Image 1 (cartoon, one colour):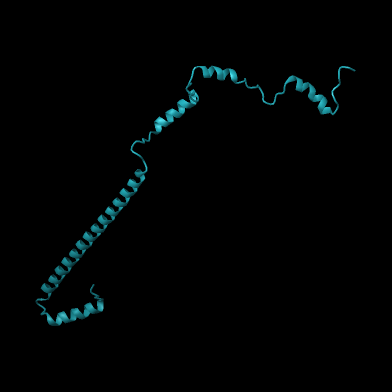
Image 2: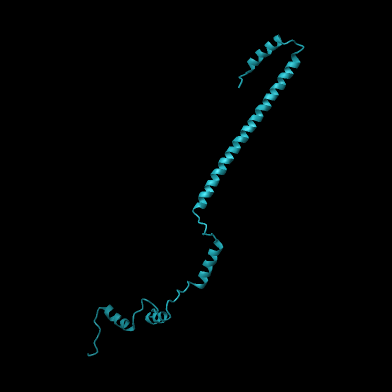
Length: 150
């Protein structure tokens, strides 16, 4: 604020020695020290209040931003949807143990007809009937199968 370098202070001190009588000089210096101390305390208090106001303004901005983020995060979640990870885990475990649930039959006669109409699966999909197995070696050799008339 005041640009008082050591050279200017020496000039002020010399002018004070000339203008102020020597018997009043200690009292004047004490008063100058007290005024300087009050000014420093007032400046420190003002700076502290200013910093508190800045921190409070930053905190209110941070609170406002955080509240906005939380509100936007919960905006997509409906009130009827509940997040229950334990229930979901329990359902998955029970489903794995018991297997998929059987579809409910719409008519009592349909399941019986469905069981009769569905053929039993083959033991091995690549398995051929015995007649085809007998004919394969002859066709693989490139010779026609022998007829029983000869």
